[in-house]
Length: 370
Image 1 (cartoon, helix red, strand yellow):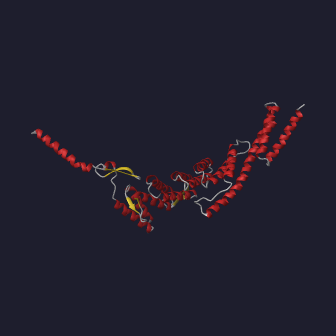
Image 2: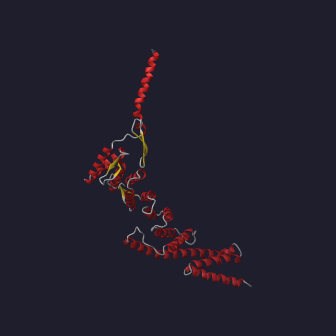
Image 3: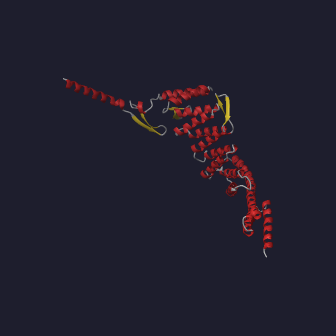
């Protein structure tokens, strides 16, 4: 009798397990935006998110769009925040008739509302989440919104605290945003402009090394872009600003000369880009002509600086070299440095001085010979 009870108990257990199989059945789903996940069945409670229906997401999207049309921005933002938290995989149809992920649309629209409220960082971060998690969403309008936010912040816009109180300007954040845009959009449409904007912000903040790094990225990664012309000129100017004088190391002087010369050689003429209008090209051409004239003057200044440095070294050998070695042995390097000064900037004051000292040195040598 006891044995029969055990058999009946095991049979009941087996039948109950067979009945639970449909409940345990789950579907493994994979898509481009949300990756691999478990949907349906009992297992989805542990491996997948239990999410509301698509109909609920659609109703909330329509509610938010209606609030926007009535300019009830706070209500719209509140609804979009609710959508972003609750509807991670549901798709909705926007008023433009496009089918998108509800959370992606909510993040994008909430970013625009936060931009309107001058909450720049929150807005940019929401857009960045769309870029990273929802690649099927309209990338062009997201990257344009990011560029707009970074440009406003770089122009000195202040973040508003509680939508009212103006905060501090944050140029470092603007520079960071532009760099992020260049990483998001690795192509000629957005990245070069973002890198140039980041470099200009760095220059305005006296951060020459950061500006150099960004401009070098531009000319190395996008050598055919129209902004390379300005990048070469800017690099020459930045290195010129780092020159301290003829008595100091001339590494920055040589770098400046190299970039000025590259600018003259590579951009002796410029052509219209397919992306430019005639008006845009004429405006760029006028700016280029100004830079060409400035580059000639800058190159002359840097050559003169290098010539003055050579002159100083030559004078040291000429006037004080005999304290350390016989005069005959210091005449050769002194002459060499004088000649280099004359060659570098033949029409400069340094060249004229070097020529006079060279003649004086030669005369002294002639008199010392028997």
